[in-house]
Length: 337
Image (cartoon, rainbow, N blue to C red; front, side, top):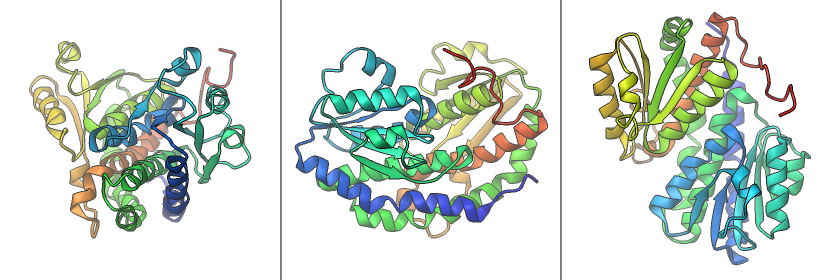
């Protein structure tokens, strides 16, 4: 068993939730200044982890929310992005050059910048009107960003009287860090077995739907591709039957991530198909994990975090069995590009 520092993990996720009051105050200030929309921007995986928050606002409220490709926003002006925009910029290091350029450009255009960073005093934090610092590293950043993004969405909905009571939600979420740590422990044996099965697998199809689709995209792109150099195709469950299904045959690895929101049936459809045509179907279901004491009505909101917590264990074992540390890179931040 690869060591897991439970105390550290719980501390970091509790730290993310510790930003609740400051985030709520900042959102209130931005709305009072006349904000008319919110953009979730960023670079790579950090940006992907903001998508569930943007999705929640798009589907539960009327405040315009955008999750755009940051490089495109910097390259060509976005008609909706301006002085009355809230721009949320996540960056674990706070130094990613594309994210620094993004924050600088948005601030120059008059937007109100909220930065989610792992380190204070970094360029991204310095460009922000409000910088929320929660010290984390790669193995704990997903849940930290998911939680802070959720707090932002909940705050917007609360201030606009379109959603759940913010404080009620925060109190429920405070139960989550140790429960997510329990998820890691509960998944450990499955993580080992899956890593053994995947150690020599040349490529994977990975899919999900709803607010868990970003986790499938993140795990495929940032873990399997960037950190393990494994060819991966991440595809939304709704698009699976419009191309990727033709790649499925015996011996093809298909990974299905299942959440607990209204879009779960889309992932279940893929699962049913994959089990018929390949002998390598891996299903990770957030509903399979107990979260004692956590309100059942709120479970759909935290499904991405449950999946991320479990998948981190899989990534650790996979890296160990393949003798390929998660920190190994050929090109990323090593060569000019």
